[in-house]
Length: 148
Image (cartoon, rainbow, N blue to C red; front, side, top):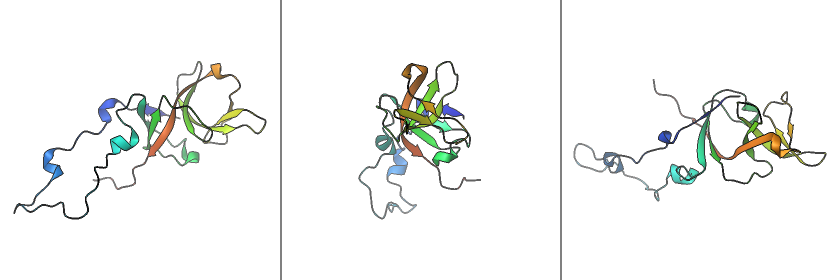
């Protein structure tokens, strides 16, 4: 599975003033209709806060979790993992990070399940054998059409 760590430069920037109150050629405001209460995607997702990072899903290995190539994962490095939460993990000695679901083990304890059933679960009996990099708070998917 391939994840790309996004940099802080990909955080959204404030809109230029010309977009905040656009007018037509006659000087009539084009912002007719309901106005929001200042919704901010950055604020909602926590972007810019310490410990919040964005990751890009590069392939289809997470389809079993309903996560698609091109989706962005918003990860909190300071969150305490809980059962039924997606975690970004890396087994000690491995170069790549992967996404796993923290789940109860039917025999007791906890497992890190992969999105594909063919990939074995990791039993969390030795926390020293795996690095838990962070907990996924949000999955952001693009559902519009790409412009030509």
